[in-house]
Length: 280
Image (cartoon, rainbow, N blue to C red; front, side, top):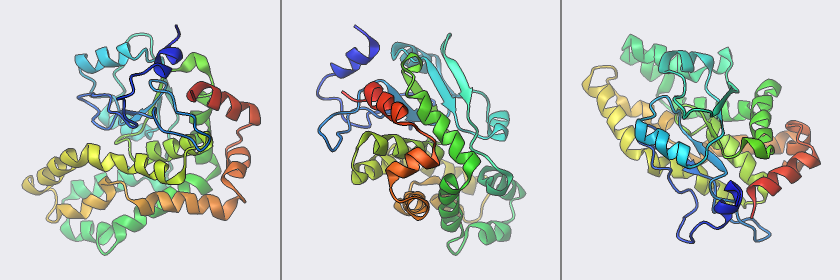
């Protein structure tokens, strides 16, 4: 019995979006269990999404090994990897970098530098009065409008069409934005309805609520920020952010199917392989 066959036979109590239970990646979860418009189901244990794996514990490595993980795609910018660390993975797992990064949309660097300066006025200028939300909305639109960046997402989706790379885990830093848009592309391509796509995206808030609270408390108690709440819109998944990506698709292509073909360069064979690999 193959890994994919075992996933199809998963117990019925496995809920969509089930957590992988990793200590070092609280937002790591399975894309399995979601239903498509034609009544099929996304397989468990094949496409995995989450946050970075640089904090993997020995227990985490055992979980990943038990999943039969074969391939990891890291969507973080190279500066994020350099500062936070490379993924810690079980032996034999292939690691592929697809950095979704550009200097004019380097939110990570902008926030890092502004926080490091501990300048409350500069922090409010960047993040206050809706600045954080505007920054996030702009980034999600950029995911779609920049041809080079679309290529990074396209390569990630194409990796899921190759059975020899599965199970595959794709991630960014928090498993929210770049990972969230990748998951939205995949689920939509599989025929999952839009509201379910949003539900998967917003599940990040449930999984990371405690972590966000601890980070905001740390920013305040350590004197990094006078107003830590300014960071909350950057750290949460908000419907308006994903709206911006889908709106950019609508503005540039006549349909999402056309975006898959013409925007991401996915062929009919790619999409057929994606559905064959990921749907039961």
